[in-house]
Picture 1 (spheres, rainbow, N blue to C red):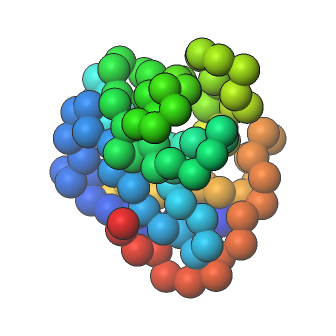
Picture 2: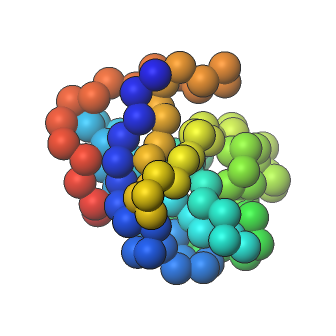
Length: 118
């Protein structure tokens, strides 16, 4: 299992998604009701960053396509678009870590570089 440090938990604001690079992959973080969730940051329909979308409750809406995804599990809640991946999140000593590999429903992601905020 590989865990990637993304940011201090205090940097996250309720209802305001935040995007990050982890190697070659874009990840979005969401704070909802004091819980933190992570998904792919790119819409499954076409290239658009979900971290620039509209978060209402546990649902993120793509800013370009209107597709809606549940940040808890990545399931598409509208249209016929594909689901996105959701990732395990841990808060350790006030810092946010995301697991990109080793999860039952998760695909392995390459770690091609340093973790960088978008």
